[in-house]
Image 1 (tube, rainbow, N blue to C red):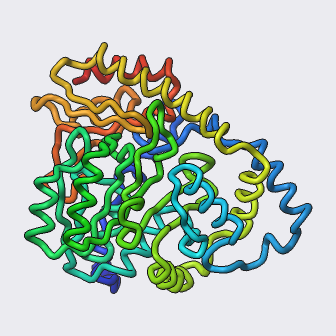
Image 2: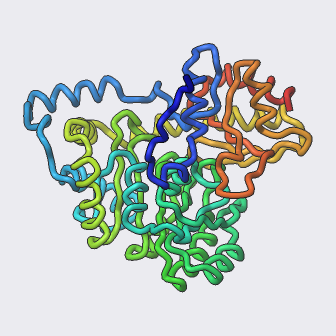
Image 3: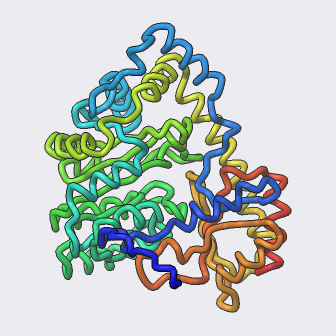
Length: 393
């Protein structure tokens, strides 16, 4: 008898959401014998395990069951005050706590933005290439994606103006500091030029900044939010600086947007984990966050230097690559005779994995690009693996 399987009545949006190649390849990375350049993973050696353990114990000692109860949707007020103070100290920005919403990682903030602003068919402008997680999340709302080429110092201003002039753009999403996947940081001039265009065309800007604290040598550049606070939604995260397992990030925007986003969040998860917020806040109150970040920056700088040295020593001279001033990634363009998928197939036989660059494009992917993560790879193992990759290219 023929086996009949009932078709599931999935919503139309389900088919619009691409599978995350990174999530799938990380299953391979679970094998301890595999060396992974694939994930955007912070180095667990710098997770403040002891400090968080002590913070958790103190929370239970001082708050007890209160830390296990429901809390407000917007997030703990003292935690939002801390974030506000951090922006005042780092950028001179005055951001009231009621313009900050604590989210379950900055990924949830993207979901809330999609729910708030994107109707099917709306034009959403992205960097080319762009963060895969944003591409996956925003696809659920069935927009029409438009793209702006990333140059060595940020957005192509000519392409940006052409897109804004020719299309009714609902919002722009970008990562100006040490972009994922390329590691590129917008120059000050590119920031000023882009801001002038966003102001002219009254474009809503989503500025994702998970890597801004991981700055190796230079001083921080002004955020786009600094110039356009009423037009910009600024996203941040503790995942890259403390621990991704806490799943805590934030959204900054004007009060009207935050109020609407809070309603969307109530419908989604009521609030981000109260216990995690309490432990994080205790950590931030009891320990020197700047000293903690300094350790991460020093280590990642060494790992970045090692990777760039390896590319120069072992890869063909025809290979092009970015030289990030912070963050966790470098972006490589390989010769035309081999695609990144072909290279991955070969490297997996050597138990080395990375993410092919074609996954980071909304359209017309470049099959000869790849993203390499340097933050979570031992420098000695990295050198041997990069030598093998160079031979395979």
